[in-house]
Length: 264
Length: 241
Ligand SMILES: Nc1ncnc2c1ncn2[C@@H]1O[C@H](COP(=O)(O)OP(=O)(O)OP(=O)(O)O)[C@@H](O)[C@H]1O
Ligand SMILES: [Mg+2]
Image (cartoon, rainbow over the protein chains, first blue to last red):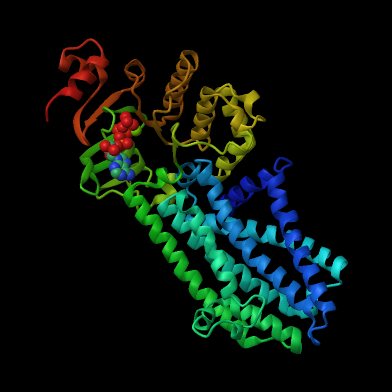
């Protein structure tokens, strides 16, 4: 890994934020806050209905903020990849000494920057609007967030591989993946709320363990080490698989001679 | 010394053979044209030289080293320009060039870019958004990018298409100067025969993926008994295999 080349890719994307792109800022600030507000008002309403003694605000807003991490990580890594495809710059980049590993390291750094900024904004809004603080979860926030971030990247690399191989027409389909994964990840409800034939699928997703653990921590105040390790193990496994998948797709694309055509 | 060595290079796309058992070597500091009709296999060959297309068989080496196993080292000394790849339109010219300077590990990137920008007369374009440039201006920016790492080898795929005669002339002068002063080796495709007569030490002619002729422009003209390369091109393009 060459840090100069990673920096080149990171800077190339940071330039885009230099006061010239409203949509890009909305991506960081506006849309996530809107989601948070919707769920925030909803949980305030549920709270007033007095549905027992669980802290609905904590559970729902915790879920919203955490799911936002998966989604932002996935979107960031996909969009920073697609940016060069859309701009027909892909070939230029891959005839430099840049390696695939460096390229994805750069997108991961960008995703982390984006997530930290968005999370800070969301948590501030949540704190002042609903007196909600994710740090009621204690130090557990960090390992949970890490797992969610890695899984977002896994999905993104998968999506990127599909787009690389089948072109931007596969874009819509590819981005749908995340919508399938949300209900399966037991974000807002326990796995047991899912139909029994779907539960096994849910249990092979690292995200499921994070959200189950989050609820357990909120209920009992303990950090669920088993769930954390299960999530991490699954993440590492999927990460290796998806990197292999991407590099296989890259090889196929080079053999078919369609790297140039990806961008058209 | 041979800077590029291509041996028995073949590329099949499914049943279709785009490049057929092509072998050639290119000496250091020479400007060589890769000529041939549309669909002859020039772009495919250049992209194999850049490891963007994987050959079906055959070998490619630069500076005596195999491309496949020394990719990172080789690509850092090579550069490429073609109108079919673009630079991000939503960055300024300077930001674009800085990105590539960093990707190639250029030591003092700003200084290098300004020096090249003077050379290609694009200094005033540096702060402009890339999207606002005219085609010819873009081509010059692309060429600046191609020189940003002081390449030992430059692969140009129709890089001078769409330049006005004045800038085309300047570009050729720059290429000649780069060749003389820095011994840059250039492999070059173009459909402009006058340009090739002026610039190239040697012409490699391919048709249907197969090597047809190889020699200096003068050699080819006398061999085919024509006064210019245009007629040579037509003769070779229409000959039966
Ligand atoms: N990815 C691909 N899949 C299938 N066939 C391809 C692919 N790329 C190129 N070809 C075919 O291979 C042949 C050589 O194409 P290539 O682009 O190398 O030609 P060229 O010499 O650069 O032509 P031009 O002067 O038009 O640029 C053409 O018949 C083309 O249709
Ligand atoms: Mg071509």
